[in-house]
Length: 161
Image 1: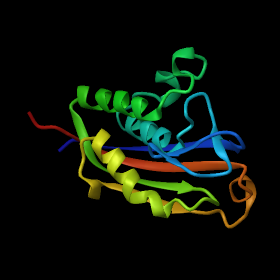
Image 2: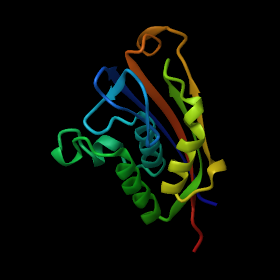
Image 3: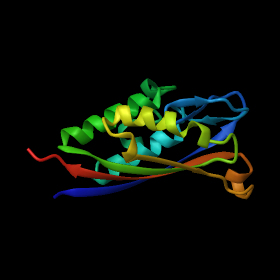
Image 4: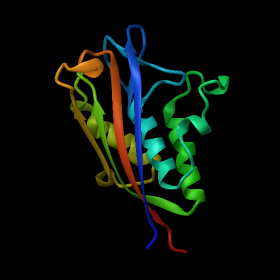
């Protein structure tokens, strides 16, 4: 059995007058993530984990922040394109395990909906999409609500055929 593991991490600065997108879901917040795209830190970490598992570089290589076509783009579109690369290489999702670091608002009330969004894009069972949330206990830029971070590991398996 051909199994691959990848790791992804992403960070975005938080600021007023921006939307907060996490896992393809807009979450009400006084602060939002700043980035070239919609700055969805969770989907970006997932993209990097999937790409890394197959040695396909990183999200910035495929979707440059200097390319105007990606300005403000919905990160769900990026994940769809990354997943197509994974399928083209003959792999499928074994599982993903992610953690979002954000002081507030609380992510936990949104996890089930986020899992559904991601599972649909990745053509996967919801129980293969683990999303966890934590704070930084008011320590450093994450705890002080200056930034948001997400980690992801992804396990891919080769499709027999």
